[in-house]
Length: 391
Ligand code: PLP
Image (cartoon, rainbow, N blue to C red):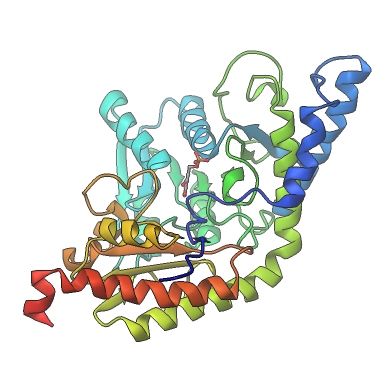
């Protein structure tokens, strides 16, 4: 291939800081360096931007700024929600979650089961990765302290009916948390209509930098603080505020709201073009996930007779960045726990790749990807004895 293009199709792992976000942040690495808690003007000048950013994040979810707590990342928000809710209800020892959560939730529950005697119900998913609401309902008991279900899955893009799940929990007086790290900014999450008590968000998935997150805590929800110290975040999360990143996140949320409708069409059209092009050009390939209930930017395909890691390495040589599962778990040779929970056969679970787009993805990049990916898969298959025997 003569002209190698750099094509970033791994936005569910992390996304580019948008030019608007970068610009909004810059003054806070320069003249606006005060501590927002200080009484003098250096502090006051900065505190007003933190307040403004909190209002922008709150607006994205249609909640009040007082219900927004800034954290350092999505994982911290998930940990804060889970440990905070359980500590506030020590008498209850049962937790409900799913088999397809991100490790930032799943491994916390595994840890709690192992070290603190919690009983954890992991809800199963069907072949498309969908949950059964009847199973959700029957899993909730008087001893259940918390149900935590992600709003959208990082690997398949599947969107879960979090409004219905939160309503079921509410009927039984059970606290409901959702990890909305992949969903926030991509689907409309009006929390006046989705009665979750807690929600996690991560800045770097929505064009803010890495190292900033949010935990939404609905007014009246009992949650113990996760980081104890000063009075910041109304005593719910101590530590001097990460002002530049908070400002960046506020801007990113504002932009997400501004671009969401357009993205829903533009990014989806590019994702669909990539999907139909690859499915037409590459035999023995399968879409992983629920095509009807999926984030508009995500495509997960299982290719038979090839290894996901090999595909990624070859694509990388041609400038294309994708992922073979969640970035945090790739590197291990185990197939992804999400695909395993869906009962995806080993024959293509191992050869699965995730392509995730953003509003910065262009038509020319998708054309290039459609030229390169089928070529790479074909070359790798020619090397596979399974392929030559079975084709
Ligand atoms: N939850 C989900 C669904 C994710 O996809 C991720 C990151 O990939 C996280 C949580 C963790 O977020 P962070 O990287 O900000 O800790």
